[in-house]
Length: 301
Image 1 (cartoon, one colour):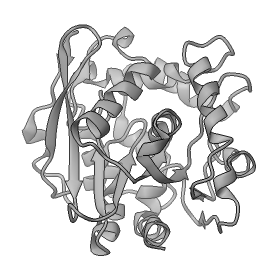
Image 2 (cartoon, one colour):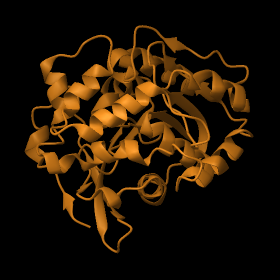
Image 3 (cartoon, helix red, strand yellow):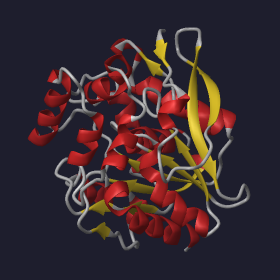
């Protein structure tokens, strides 16, 4: 497997994300290894929150959430998915699969960090991967926060706006990652923040991850990930531990999933599920402080 490794100096001018990264080598699935990056912030003995980002962002997205959680004594582990952030970036689309991404994150958080009694906070692909981990290793998790995400099986059609996004990514001669993130926000984005989302991707060849992830989402019942996702829903439909649905009010892609999750997962019952106002798909960027306080209250409550 050929990889691209983003030079460290690309992250030198990123403001507001001062935690030093840690690295771990994980099996790449082809007999070699990949280097994955993560941030481990807050007290080592505090309750642990696993923060998983999605497409096309990296753990920088969670900086304001981390600030709020660390301030109340919560340990935060934020992983950069393979192909994103400071993690290695395979150069071939076929190197990526849903199953491989689940396994790569599992290796970091369970085999390497041995997280237990964790709270998952998953948004976008971070929710897809995270919910698979929750379903496949329920003993490792104490609670879940689903934020603008879902777990499709291909049994139901994806919304037209998602197909528009997928096609735009596929057809772009030059993929403008910062612009994609900004387009998923409502409150605007300053140039320095936009540059931080561009930082992991200095060349077009480094952008295979953002380009390929939409193609890994199950859109037909015979997709390679369908059976595993159906099995995960089987577990989630019996999940009675606390499960918070914290969506924004302005995400046309995942918004319809909020009532579905609340209806299907028993652990959502009896909880007050917040709706983050004036926030788009990337609610961590639009309202990170507010989301951080919601998660802090859920964990500490």
